[in-house]
Image 1 (cartoon, one colour):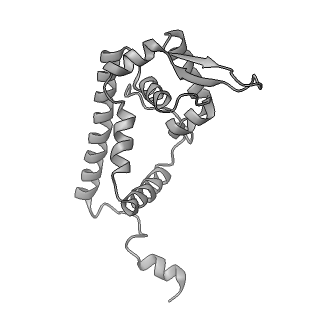
Image 2: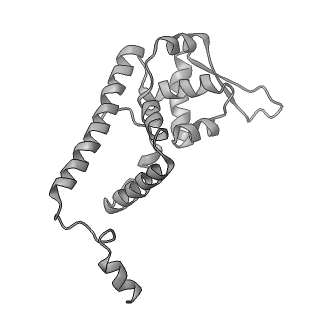
Length: 174
């Protein structure tokens, strides 16, 4: 059998031709549950704290590891550095974080949560991204790899016109 014939006879490699509409509906429902849970939690965070869920997540990360730079924080939040800078501008304007240049190289900026930021964190609920992160980390690595591969296939099949969408924070506003 030729490799191309093997791929054609492999049911896992064949696209769904609506032969399993119940499975498709189930996946859509599960995605809605996840999205709505994130949206609801994001709205609750904003009501409780007066800041966005993304801003709260950034504060949590800076509390956990004081002195991060923008690049390190961007990696932890899985967002683009320019998005992180904009988020930090808002937190700094509210007096919740401060930027320090303690090193000889003044180009390096270290980030710290201020006392008002710590007070906000003391009364804040968990950020929704943190809850999603916690849930994903609780999965066995094999299942997490399978989920990642399946989501890669789904994103690819959607032919998205927004390749950088994954580098933008989710604030539950849509």
